[in-house]
Length: 463
Image (cartoon, rainbow, N blue to C red):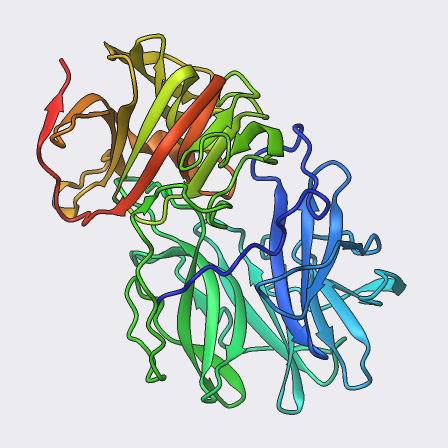
């Protein structure tokens, strides 16, 4: 099953102001998307100065989306929206609490009330979703925290406010204490497909390497089939590769490996850190190139000029043709300000830098000829046959590619230091281009998935 990104719901500063002081793993938390009365409704929490709970609407999910409607009476994260038979809108959020709101104005009515909150004593009841299925209201929640103890539980009752009866088989989904390749399963939602089948969409991670296991792609989205038994959902296998349902095919073209920056706007897959002011990037200064104008001095800074895309595959190759004549910049693999690797072209040389917590050494350097240069990063997942308790989840090779494709590797770095288990937070790696001083231009950028079961050849390891 393949998905195609059709846009970004929040795509302009007026919808999502994130000042430089916004911490990494802040910003948008756990949006919920619903369709009601001919409109799509998106509600989310923004953890940033001046943020809070906000709501957006659109008649087309591709946009445009409205300006935000603030809902100041909802003070918890993970807000959900549900409408009852009388058209009243209920917002349920982490805790688990619920309050009636006017989604048009953001006004709340009355005081929040506490609902069923999962297993007594369980950590972090959150991510509630409320549904009407048949004659009952179902309340689905996550519990156990977002790490290895994560799970999904459910209860049902006669009305949006309950009282709720918990499912006797709770948690209906959890991979805690198992050796399954997908872990931290939780924060789920239920959906009924057009053919009447039911599915659970959920978050999970794919840890790699030895003990305790390190995940580097962030919390990914998974899909699992659902059947019903005595009025309760039974969740099927959450598998790395799932069998496609028997639905009419809707083929999608594979995303191109290369972005030549020939379009008049960036594809919605390209993201930046907190903001991307119009003056710090351009596709028209030099048509056919992405020009980046430096703000911060390095990837350590909160306001760095960085344009990247998410690492989506355990193994991948990233290449870019860079012209550093007007400044310093290069390619980077970023988790946050204190955890990133980069290869930078500057002042007639190429240097590999590694920021790991409070350390920021220059790992390797080599002279570079004048003119454009192809920088490359290979991310290579560890092979199952090589596993031992201290094995890294992957290695990152950073270097320069010659015209004949030969790869001069300046450094090979341990990937565990760019993982959530080391850095903390919730987001995965982003790989992209940056400018640290002046203006740096990029002719093209390649992102290519690799078969992580084999190692690519034709490399030259620098002494």
